Amino acid sequence: MSTPPARRQVGIYEKALPPVGWPALLETAKAAGFDFIEMSIDESDERLARLDWPTETRIAIRHAIEATGVRIYSICLSAHRRFGLGSRDLEVRTKAQTILHQAIELAVDLGVRVIQIAGYFAYYEPPDPQARARYVAGLRQGLDLAAQRGVMLAVENIDTADMASADDALALVEELGSPWFQVYPDVGNFAVHELDVVANLAKVASHSVGLHLKDARPGEPRRVQYGTGEVPFEAVFACLGSLPYEGPFTLEMWNDRPEQALAAASAAAHWIRLQMAPADVTQASEPAGPRGE
Image (cartoon, rainbow, N blue to C red; front, side, top):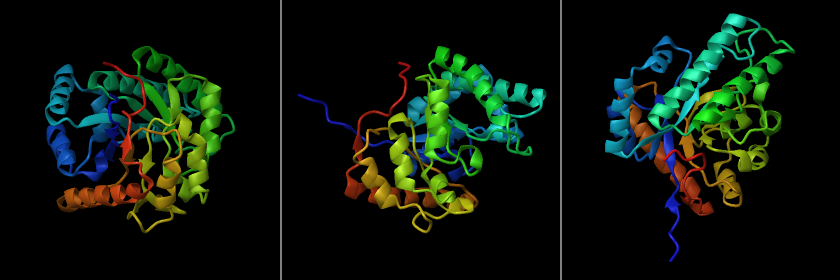
């Protein structure tokens, strides 16, 4: 007798939830109807400090994960906006490499499957034709450690021209040539660039280990309410129903009013599941990615 497929895993970006400690954050995500959280390690000193968490803190978070049943599936490593892997400055590149290595070790300790790598080469610097080559070299060095530690790295298409399209992401995957480097597409960022969202998603589906669901408009990559932007969610889920993608979905939202965050996240989860239903993508096998058990 065959085992029925698991329910489609749906997670939430950390910044959508009230700013509380991790045990409470996991409980909040569970109350809002989510299966996992995507952790943020952004360019702020506060979140960068997570890379230096002591062993006791990491163990406590693992215990909270076990107690709630809510995982931390991925880390959104947007700290590389501030410290670009493609920077002209060797000191900045060295810091970026250190951040990547520390994030990999944190992922191992927390049981995180995927580190999402932002596609920014050197965000705060003027355009430089050599920036991409430096970015790739930095990724290659970090990828050696990620492969050894069994952690997947996945590039996200972003809101700038550095990594705008599916073709950009696939070119990077091909160049790095490792099963431990894949794609974490963001449907909203395709819309930001006025690209065909469905066509670009279809191109990267077989290389995707996660999927960011957010609404957006050209020039507005953040804080666009679901259903009011340019992302054709019904067409996205119809497309996914016929593609070889059975991994998790992550709702990418931001919390500007903590007192309303839980209600807003719950409403978004309900809305997304309604969009999924006609395409029958509510059931799937376990999320893609390397297994650590």
